[in-house]
Image (tube, rainbow, N blue to C red; front, side, top):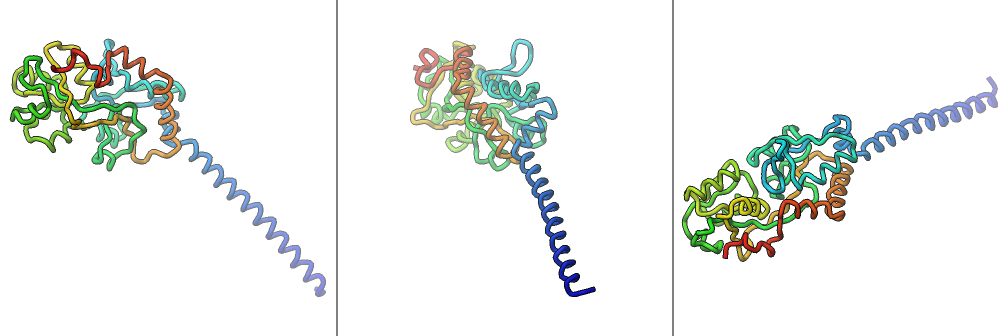
Length: 282
């Protein structure tokens, strides 16, 4: 083989290798781009779409989360997720839960969202949170005939204060008194007050309003200064991807800014803390 032929073959080999590298590199880039595109769609949301169901863990806390006349679970707090389910073309499926185990149910993948859940450091170590759906203060509920009209009087009375076991306000109260009576439901907390086993209940403002509206013998005591301020959001798995979280937060924002949530609050007679009127203990 002549020297010229060897040079020619070498050049051809280099060209062939370059073309091959370009082909395989393009293929690899294509696969990477495809994977990136798939990831950008939001795997959490995609899983919901594939399943055809958006599952929501719901613990009863009227008026925000309630049992409807037909037996289903609903309420104003569900509205952003109801709208999200419509947009995704899937069925909204409420799953019954209790406050003491609602986070555990989310971790066990019994549902995709935990409704009406307060931000706490303890919970945030186990799960993630969406943007807030609404904010509220913690308040006391007492008999209308109670001698106590301030939070200081209630705490210093030495009487038992009922709370919903596992609910965020309970943890705050533990820093103020040891006279706490954890109950497995808000209705049992009210029963404890009516039976004089507890001097008051400490709970969130929406729940207290619902209870006082249903039973005129109960009144709300608003702590001054504020003892607890709650931020209710949706609990989601700690592994949720950023794109899916963005989609959920947009659904929450649209429900807020469109006035849909405000209209729903009005329908269930929910009032801001400075507009309680006769519901407040004088």
